[in-house]
Image (cartoon, rainbow, N blue to C red; front, side, top):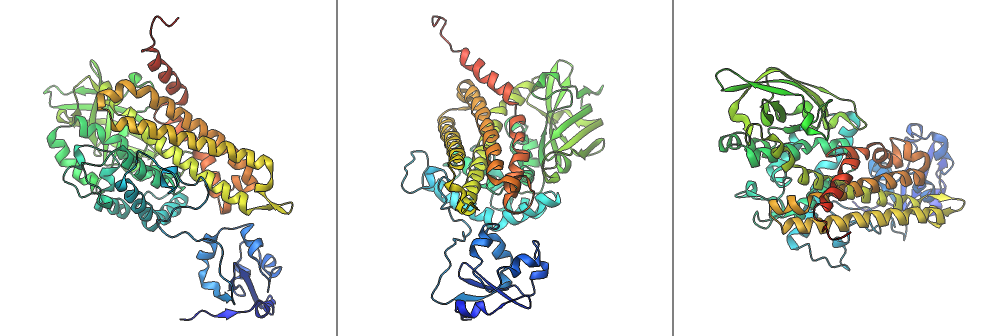
Length: 510
């Protein structure tokens, strides 16, 4: 069908409440039937009836709103073309500093190969086409991520890829045709960062964050029979697993866990009693990788949901879609074969997972911060105050400069650590990177603190409003503290980083 073409003079004649047209970015919209439904009131639209409302519209909205009301579009202005860029699924942002430099053609990075760039493109398109709409909707409704979404990710082996490189990928056909033998931590970084761009923090954690931290102990310490039984179902998105370590009695201090297990007289089972708190995905999980107190120490075991296992949601700063739960075990019978690693040696199992968990959080934290910087740059370029855009205000440029410097520093340090991970075995990572990753996580979350504060100041009232232009800013400011607490509080990690460094301090350096 050919496009209907109008002149500006023709549009100007449609300037009454009963015949209300406007021009937005060279496109003509008939708002007559919509005026009384307009969230901002009909009077706002009557004030621009028959006129070019581009500046007025973009001083309050983004192009996403036009896409939502595309049915109101009736034609275009003669000899004119739209100037506002509408991103397509998979496309890179053209906003300065909105993308890591490795995605810019004018920059060269020694870390990323063709398979990384291919995965990034396909991952962004997958997120834009399949995940984003559900994520934003469920973030508001509080629904857990759908079974269909878990299975969609499972079909292309994205759930398996979220656990990083390893034997678990052998024999699988990976997403974006990445070969299992070439899959490295930079591939995993890309997957995590693309998922983080959605701007739906609760949904993001709900979409298999529990698996990322709860399944590695099974892969690394579980029996062959256990792995054969549950891992394929989890990778296919049919079952969900979480990590159940934290308690009301003990957070970072895992040695103080109170949840306990006693062996039955025949030695074939444990009877588990106790509680866990703040368990991500716990409310809808099928399996719980659980730390318990046993006779001579700590033991980690896999507990399936069943008789005696109860969960209830904990209200947190973000959406219930993450499934953050209080878990109680009441005389739960667990076979001894479900022990991960060795009995009473659970601390090794717990600690083995911390570096990767914290590194994943750094990947997400740095990318979410960059997304917020992009939102601020868009808004500062769009918002008119005192006859000029916010970008004309030196105080705003100063805030943006600090935010940009922080996200670039986070990404650079993150890529440096990631490269080290790719060139170290597990033992070397534990020896040399525990402190680095601890300090990196602390730095990333401190950066989030600064960025969240400045972003709200730039957006003003919109930055504390859960809908409209500032909704991503409001959510970031409300939820960024999760990263500062989960996986080890900032203060604990700062101390860990320094203590790790002091272990190699030469005694002669006095």
